[in-house]
Image (spheres, one colour):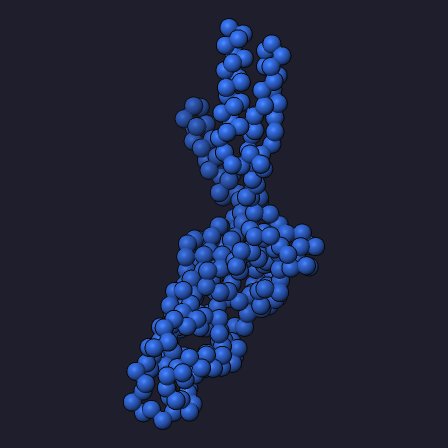
Length: 276
């Protein structure tokens, strides 16, 4: 029996040694079998893919690893409640519609209206795909004139926004209507997104609301004190939102009398009345 065990252990070790090319990066483990025979096999090292918070050194050097999350106030700009951002600074987003007016071509050039696709590109005749998402109107004009100018002599061009695409924000946690909510171009701010979700509930911890934005392979977040915004008029707590942002409202640890205590008291009173 001992010989059979030793042989089986040795065979298992041989099979593990020849199984996978990840052995070079695997952890070597030795097991002492019966009759003094040593079985050597390799156990692949586990890879930790759990997102982690980037260190201050990584953030400062700009070398945060993929999948890291960074607390940043600079990524989220304070919102303006009056009107849309200055059009000179406005950057195109997916589903935005543009009208083109080319000087010297009263009947157009075959493409008078274009829409930014879900991938951030527009389709132009002759030229093909051109990325416009994230560009200002001045940058867009320069790109279009350069691209189309290879095929058509264009003296000048006007680019105007004829329609804005919807901005979809994920509002989750302790809100009355969690889910994906659209905000208009004039209401691109965290408070408006929370309002579209019916506002936060009585259980919400409104002083620690999180807004999350993914840029590339990195997740940025900021903590918002919406209670200070609503009651103390701290405008810095309301930030601009972008399509795809996530707003999460955590739950408070506080106890609500009518929700947490009264139901049990009523049940106890009913039980007491039935048993007395």
